[in-house]
Length: 152
Image (cartoon, rainbow, N blue to C red; front, side, top):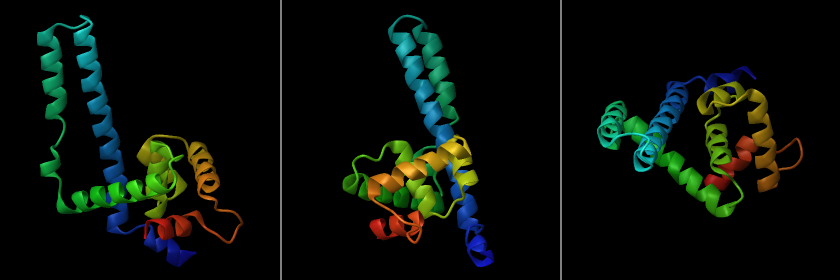
């Protein structure tokens, strides 16, 4: 058990957790920008106010071109994993795909909960859903191993 725990606390692993937090915030900012535009279109916000708010929100976002090589590598790998999993198992929702990728990376339930902003109980439930969708049964098959085989 101690040796597998060491694998989970590498620099890449910590970067993965941080990247998950940043990605969640980035997604939230994009959703706020869309909401501002919706409010502008229905007349709840003036064009000037909407433009100012959107500009301020966008200033908080780094462009994809500004990502570090490690962040880009993680993003590209995550996208590849999600594409493979979605193609093979169309029943996986976006939240389940994210849990799959975090599981492949070896994140603990607590860490996954932190990355995606859900409770540990929710993560356990999502893992059970994933096991059912991809057909992992029995105690001898770990979800991480099965997911790793699928994306390999």
